[in-house]
Amino acid sequence: MKKALALVPFTALAFTPASNAVEVFKDDKNVFEIGGYVDARVIDTQGVTEVVNGSSRINFAFTRDMSNDWKTYVKLEWGVNPFGNSTISYSSESNFETKSGDFLNNRLGYVGLSHDDYGSVSIGKQWGAWYDVVYNTNYGMVWDGNASGTYTYNKSDGAINGVGRGDKVIQYRNSFGDLSVAIQMQLKNSVADIPDDGSTNPNRLVQTEYDNTYGIGLTYQATDMLVLTLGGNTGEPMATTASGRVLKETDYIYGAGISWGGWDQYGFYAAANVNANEYHDTDNLGRFLQDAVGLESLVSYYFDNNVKILASYNILEAGDEYEKVHQGDVFKRQFAFAGVHYYWDNSVVMYLEARKDFSDFSSRDPAKEAAQQLTEDDGVAIGVRYIL
Image (cartoon, rainbow, N blue to C red; front, side, top):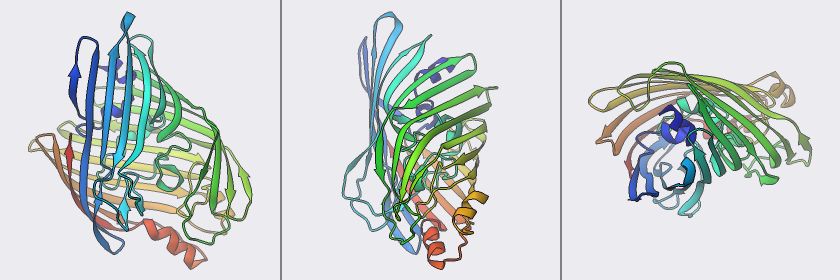
């Protein structure tokens, strides 16, 4: 089983039961599976109560046995918005945003080649090696963590710097005893526009340009219950501010994680990860975090009656350099959430989660302070997830 973990993206196995797939076709050479879920929730936050899409998705997986113990595989996944347009929507990256009418959006798409001894190589849009370090706290249905350095550039999917669902990634995975290794290069030369937040701040980023990025993730199965992770990611972004100023810096993040137990197993589960980073993420106004540290933590207990209780605490705090550049502004994204999940026949999950915000976005400019707080608020959500 430990060898198998190295041959497919580690996080694909982490999300049980949500990652369960139905085997549609199988012969002596090929396997075709369909997976995903539809998630509907009612959420009350920022003075609005609304039905929203809970990161619903559908995916297709193809595996083919080749000669000499080699296998090829393909994974395609799309986000699905089955509930139509909304004035406020809650995305899988914990971001409130106005949704377009698009029914599908690309989440993952990669092709790979694997061998039991030589490991696997995959190419395409896939979970980054950094995510192996911090996945262990990202299990909330509604308020998953935004302090791990994964969903960068104000809670996007982490594609820009390859730490989340990275674009144009080449990734190698293998395991050596209890140690699993993921190494990646993101080969691209891309320009990305940063959505306009409506502010008049001259330091707001309006465009970023990235060349290649590089990442590594190490996972050590210390015991049957204890898992340790370690890794980092780096790149060199160039950004243009609203005033036309061009910035060129080194983006890096490094950190470690620890977990006890299994999220999908009955009993106690606990996990935490920490990271330090520079020019890796932005604040809620789209300005670079010159330096920051992040912490995510999660504890849960899964009872024999299929009820799970959980609680999480997360903090991402910018350092002295950020305050110096932005005239004393404070950026501290800090919140806790708790919830109850009920797993019915391992195919339907009903859940209730509530978030309490403790963030600090102090600024000399009241307008900036208010804008920073816009997507950080208390909230309550109730929902149901139907797993395909």
